[in-house]
Length: 415
Ligand SMILES: Cc1ncc(COP(=O)(O)O)c(C=O)c1O
Image 1 (cartoon, rainbow, N blue to C red):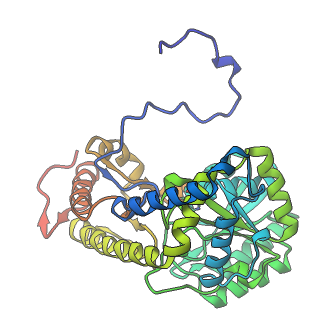
Image 2 (image 1 turned 180 degrees about the vertical axis):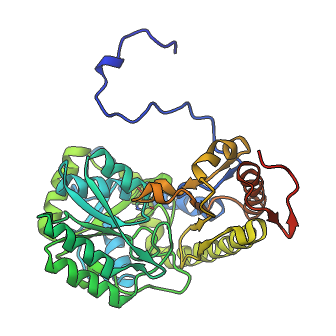
Image 3 (image 1 turned 90 degrees about the vertical axis):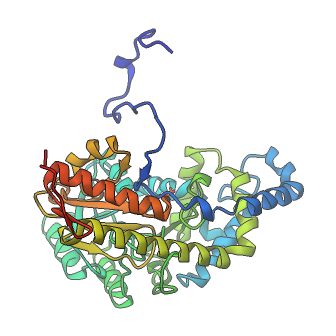
């Protein structure tokens, strides 16, 4: 369509994101976002599930929200059963809200609690999507320190106390305790108790995002924060990582006073989450959850090992720190300070490589210029090997790092 037929530009709202470039397809070596493994999508079983539910309940699609505004009962029951097993949450159908991806659950919780100028505490490295949403809302974001086990409670205590001296009570602490994004840590039980005791003392709710909690290498992690304190914690999860992100299904679990508000906000935001997707996932997962997630986790662990080997081979000692994740789909790395990964984005894209630059996953972007995140779920093992090798080549050409790959000293002059 030709540009310029109608003068819109002065009508657009202020502070919009920049216009999206025309989509030209996925890169050859795609290490970004949270895509899943295409070989693990159970397409035939999903087709059977769709046929079965459409035969049984197809006529109900005539109604908006045919099982009420909290979503399809079958899927809410699945969430109740699933969270009872893994993070040990006891809840009922009324405590669960199905959302269009857990991203929508984040929007709803933000809508419920935040106003421009409010302060929130996140983990110093965190989910980039959560950061983008908060920046758009004009909220002050403070990063709390992490170590290899997750949130450092003494560091968090100092932040809350310092804010208290200025008369500020943060609106929430957002945390990804089980398979933290991007570092892959699992917060130990003791720290979970300490986190809740600390935040309770200061009247701060905890916003728990358990997007990856089902995908751990060594079985279930400790009980979720919600399981320990269902009043103080708002819990969200997703079917994007356990099944398929394109289905756009997530959920929130919350105490009735929060839930009734979330449901009201969702009713204003949309006319329900896609019912067919909910029915298909409930039908498939009510029989296959354990088997599916077990197989997927094994595949992901194998791909992680391939990626770690590739990074060690191609980058060697140029990797200053590698966070070996305890589950999930991401590897988080730190290169030497002189490597500014944001300057690698364009040349990497030219070579068909996409990766997530550290600053977008950090509350302190200026201090994370040499960090990066690689997703290993989508590419095949061959593409992981070839893509990491190609990325090391680009990195060397731009920065002189790594000087050595696969035990061979690089000869080209850095440009
Ligand atoms: C920690 C975390 N929370 C939430 C989301 C949103 O996922 P979705 O909206 O697909 O459920 C993501 C996506 O990558 C994530 O990493």
